[in-house]
Image (cartoon, rainbow, N blue to C red; front, side, top):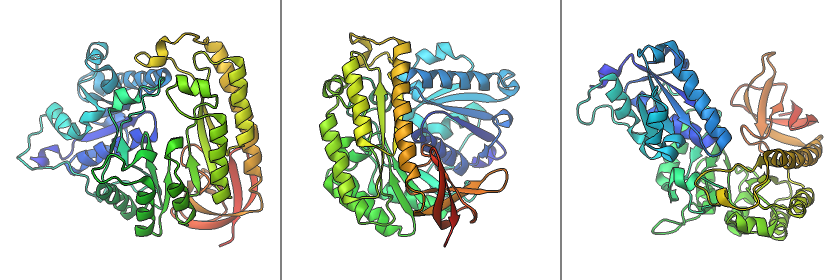
Length: 440
């Protein structure tokens, strides 16, 4: 019975992106509803779940380091506690992990995360009656409140970009139902979330796989109108997903952040074709222009890859020219990572690590210069800021609609409590940070 799990604790160590954070939150909620205590200190827990990332080699290495660190805890090494390896690594490497990581008691790939209660029950000898401790995503009074919450609207990907492991890890694309998304938004709003960030591997495709197709624009409009006091932000919209309807939806709803995160990945048409992607510098600049014409104060973010196999110096220079002409607010940069099992792994023209790093740094330096200048132009303007927390010296900080969680910096303010939305006059900036005074 569920009473047998009372007093038993589970802790999570989450690697990688916000999508993994959502998966960890869902596993934690299932365990909490089944009677387990979710511990903050992994060294004191009966079970430690390391939710791994292996999107690129660097992420895999970081996940392995985290697993080995947890395996070194005295409680794990002595057998008093158990280690579970979950997420992307078990999904990508399967049974091979069991021989490589004997310290782990169980491996739970992405597709099996809904079974986390059964996995933990089995390791701890907890038995349940049928229907006892049902692992459903209902609210729980002890769940931690978050000012900004991530909500996944789909999983998987059908694009099969030549450099990407996601389709092999997460499987084919499938949208979550609008009913389930609304319920998840409602749960987070009830817990105090003032902003909901919609995420997926390919948010722009949401609803296209339904028997009666829908669209991201329709979902966003419905959410914005249902939860009028909540900010909504959407991340990871592939260029093809930025439709006229979506731009109009963002423009016409005050509580949808005028913010587009569009991973262009490159600007040279030949390189993009080699990546199994569409587009060109010309088409991307047209898209940027179209968005800015409709939403003049829009914030634009992208992600780019430098040093892709076969990228010539001229093609790299075209990428730099595109960055300068597009003049985006934020740019994330990756040096190309050669991943086994992807189509780009065996391409001719592999670029050595030192040159890849040089090119990525050149992109980073240019993007930082342009972004800092754009952010500095906000001085003198006003912005609504949701207060997220306090520095050690007591100064409140938060985020404006032009700042996505975890990636775009924060705004320091001189008043407000966590969860408040305050109107601020921006008085100063430093690289990606802003500072201002509350005026209302």
